[in-house]
Each structure stands twice: as C-alpha cells, then as structure tokens.
Image (cartoon, rainbow, N blue to C red; front, side):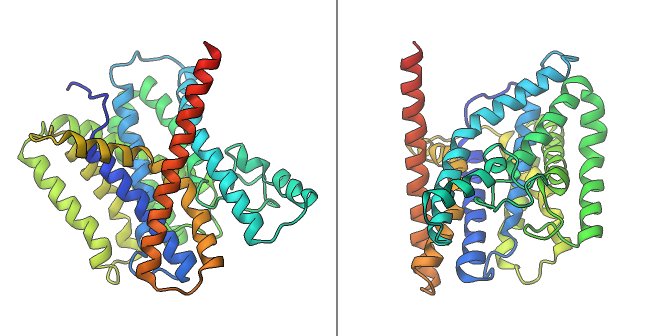
Length: 348
C-alpha cells in the first residue's frame, strides 16, 4: 500500500477531539471538583498511544532491517526534539500559574521551585527520582512515557518486524491491560501507583502495540472496502457511548476502548475521501497540529479559572475554557513557528 505522508484531516479531527476531551476531563475534575459528563474521557490518552503506534508502523515500513539500537535512539530523539518546544512553553506557562496560585513570592523561592522542577524540564516528570519535586504541569508525564515506549517498539519493528507485528502487537495489550486492571482496578490517572517508568510506559507500549496491530491488519488488509466503513461507524458509535452511557460503563468496560480507537484509526486511514473541501480540511489539519499545544497548556488554565472565577455556571465557563485553551494554543504555535524561522535565518 502506498504511504501517505501528508496529514489526513480525518485523523487530525480525531486528534483534536481527543485533546479537547482530555482538556474537558481535567476541567470537570479540577474546576467542577468531580467529572459530570466526561468521567471516562481520560481514556483519550490511550488514543494518542494508539495513534503514535499506528504512525510508528507506517514510518518504519520498508525501512532497512537490523539497523541497531542507535537508529531507534535517533528516531526517539527526533520525536522528543519535535515536541520539546511545546512541552517547554507548556511548562513555563504552568510554572507561572503555579507560582501565582500557590503564592510563591520572591526571587529566592521562585528559583528554589525552579530547581526542584528540573526533572520535569528534562522529560523526567514522575520518573521516581524527583519525589520531593512538585508537579508543575500535571499532564505531561505521558510524553516521556510515550518516548520510552517509542524507543522500545521502534527497535523491535526495525529488527524483529514479524515477531513484533504477529506476537507483540497481539499479546502485549492483553497482558498489560490485564495486569493493570487486576492489580489496580482501573486505568485512571492520579492514583498512587502511577508514574511513567512503570505503568506509564506499560500503557504506552500497550496502546502503541494496538496501533501497530491496526496498521498491519485493518489498514493494510481491508483495502478500504465496505468493511472499513462498517468498522468506522461501529467505533464512532462506541465513542459516543462514552458520554451517552457514561453511568453504565465500568472501569473494566473501559479496557475495550483502546481497541476501539485502534479500529477507528485503522479503518479511517485506509479510505481515501471521495470529496474534498480544501479550505475546511486545512482548518481541521491546523486544529490537529495545535493539539499538542492544547495538551500542554490546558492544565494551567484549569487552575487559573478555579482560582479567579470559581463556582460559575458549567456551560458558560466550559465555553470560555475551550476558547481560551484554543487561543493560547494558537499563540504557542505562532511563537514556535516564528522562533524556528528566526533560528533558520540566523544559521544561514
């Protein structure tokens, strides 16, 4: 199958919806105090793991085998480097919010807090070596978990492709999700066991393995026929069920959703749209592009709103929140783009 290098607007739309879903989950959890409609929306984290595995499989397809661990290190380093500007700006924004909300005053106290936060700046949030450090940007620990899992699975794909696609991608999700559920009872975040070097990496490996499975089975074998349409419809209905049937879905039911995400991504990507509205597609692609910025920015905004605009109506504040997050994400993208242009001109 010919690989498409350009962004697919349908995948970017899902990426944007998933990011807003995570942002709204934290809005309900932090601002309201408890999830109201979106108690299962932390599961969209698994969506990004699955999506990353899907594109990892696509990007490594046809590459030379046996390139060794350094090839995988270089790939992971490129991914880390690509995400770091957004990650760093998100940290700086959240650091300012943290100082404001927690009333950290004076240069000495601010520098002391910054020193304690050094591990988070270095992609080592919740790594276990920063037990005394505060959590500045509470959502970003999954980024280093994703990078660690990418290193492992990239190496396996490049050096043991058949074993990875036929064995790991099938058995790893079953084994990992079963272990987490039977040991801890749920996949939810902010419970005592969670840190990126244990459960975080395991969840990333499980989700990315499902993405690899989706690429090599659904995407490469259905051929974009009626089967893919049916799979897409079923998976989208099940996603809507996260809201409609929210009170009837148990923690154990949630384990099904990484598989639903894998089916949805694979079945959507395999089909080439018959109709195209370029201007609308470009807007959606841009929204997908700023999704990482939304992810790293939204946490601080939740706490700002809770501190300065408490106990307002859910509907109106939710709209203000989403608009604020999107506007700031666009500003972050502009800053990164302009900085890269300036750096490119300087180096020429």
